[in-house]
Image (cartoon, rainbow, N blue to C red; front, side, top):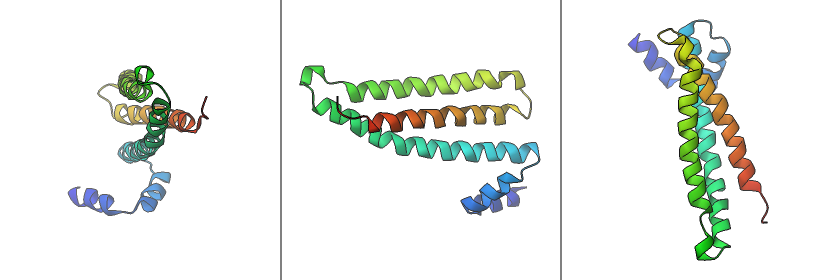
Length: 129
């Protein structure tokens, strides 16, 4: 079992994706849900940089006493993470203690993370007002 985990950790991402296309056991599907969540988190982190840059640009265009766009986005993101994590824990609660619970929670977190990534990308592309 330890050897299998080591081998899976060493596979390139493309092989993992192909492997996930053919996942049939609950363990494989849960592992694949985790891989999808990692990819979604990576995309979210990449979208964060230009969105925060946009908010800094907004702040730079305002008088010092009116700035706060970057801090507002930072606070919103912290709140969103709490919402995502608690909401997905609740969504998976009906599977508590079962083998589906971690997969359902990871799928929920992936879905919400992908939606948030799209929101951040849209925010970064907004024209100056």
